[in-house]
Image (cartoon, rainbow, N blue to C red; front, side):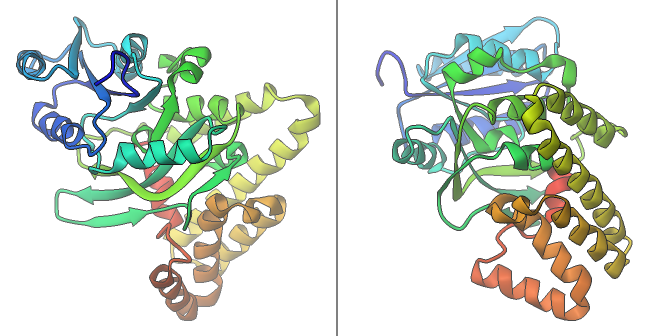
Length: 330
């Protein structure tokens, strides 16, 4: 490994030693070798720190840091960001895992698109009961400006991203005042800086489990930070951004009726969402949030069959936009 590794992986952890062991093993199994791994113990009291010290003693690429008192994951991530030596950085939560090719796929995309500010791939969600579902945003690697899509509600979890370390430091890292939606706050700011390489590859294994926490007012919090982001825009861009927020409101109503099995009502709101900001349908990212539930809602049984055909042929790789929205901040 070079003196300054190409990639730093940072994992904040708190009292999840069993899942953390699997997370660490997945980083060690990467096919790309020029990495360092910083695990930040956020005041654990379950033996995590002793275990980490033993792991670091046997692996010169692994460094263990400790916060004596728990300060939440944003502070732990920022401690890792401060200590990172890599030109690129990936934040991997302590309950998730990287597939063996993940870092290599990210770096290949950034080499292809040197002006990209970051790369982001798909994920495979899995649960304790053996359920598995893949989520992709594109069929081939694309260089996309994604700020409108992030404002609309596309928020891949942090482990799906490889960032350029300097960009994150320039933004000041993660904002602890916005837990648990600090990912969304960061992406709203970062995606204004330039295009992103969006990969079809599954670069994260995302674990769904009972220990994940979501506040009851999550949607209200996210709407608030979106409105705050709008206020930072030049006046010439604010009207278009307001249309995106209006499209988001219609989309949320569509989801509500979708889950109530009120198909035509859902479809009307999905259609209105697209009509509020037609450019959302020009991006593969937001189009695949809107079109599959729209077709299913308006077409009934035929739409369900069409959605299945799209998935089988690769035309609808984000399986269900409703599931994506439900997972966007976990």
